[in-house]
Image (cartoon, rainbow, N blue to C red; front, side):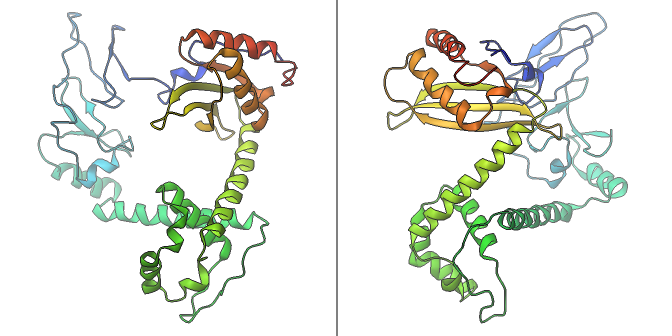
Length: 335
């Protein structure tokens, strides 16, 4: 299999997840690029019959427009409640997630609430129900992940003074998710005030949760290894080639970091973006040197046989990087 490399956008770039800004298309094929920080896709308008240019967009911006707090905006097609939908008269409107109905947003939300209740049985409490369902799903995912692992874990008191049972594997997965998602220190588990709070909620916490950050370090490392193996398997089962995007920048503490992102279609037909590596670069930022790090990432994830295009900026060292990877293709088993 030949190694394909290009400095142009990958084949998947037509997807909204890969485009840099939404594009508004009119019936006469004119296009208008919109600042993604001002409006979110989809945005639609209809041009006039005379073929004149489309009307200008409203001048409001996130700095002047108040954030949306009503629960009805959580029932639009886009997950972000701040998404702006425009009708053919360039007026903002609310669009229903469950049908083709839409309502103007300048007349209040009463008609929208009535529509959601009568047509779809949705109320303000429905949003809370969704949060509860997502929380329960997260716990179930943690249980499934912990049961698929064969780690020897510290034996916990599975039935404390309250009679409540606990799974050591589920506790480990959920705690690691908590500290990594919130960027919390590993030593948080040693904080007396934190443990006091947990002890107030359940006085058996000292039995269930380790008291040393070294144990938490072991938890994080083995959860990382387990998740990495799972992601490798997911990459191998991808429907499409795996396209890479990479860039080099300097962190606030003056470390040169090379980021490598993979984009592909999963086996269940979803566009997915995965961070493969954030590498601290040693030495000169030449194409020859950078190609070694890219090659290591490709070999580490085992995606050489599914490699597609590469997307990067127009720095001259990237041209050399591509040439070096092409010269190394036999060593990374692309045939």
